[in-house]
Image: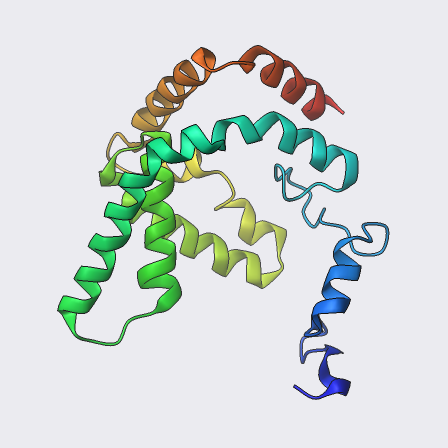
Length: 192
């Protein structure tokens, strides 16, 4: 990338920044380049400044060194299994769809205690949501925005199982230090 191409607009008018120093500068300038890019609350990455810091402070204990250490063997197993399957197939694969998205869904499912049967519906929801988001039309994203709504339209018990999984996950969180503080802060934050 030449010096003149490091900051430019692409064919769709989106800003492309290829200079590290400029990326760092912009990341520290939420007045000009905000992380709030959606009308839907995205915690914590869709927040700026103090709100982002407050949510990180509340959420970080759930991914502290002890929590990650407990999850790490399962994440390593998931990664090794995915790589072994792709290697055994001995065929080209998509780094995002076949490896990245699948690892992300399996890792999230392991952390949240979700059922392995949800992998394909979750991957389909991610793909549908990505396509809808790229249209730029709110109506397109409205149909895929809500994961439990998407699963509720399935003929199986996915929505009920997701609801149960959420309750089980929250029960585990309640045992963790500071849950009530997190719940209170989150409720107050969403009311703003």
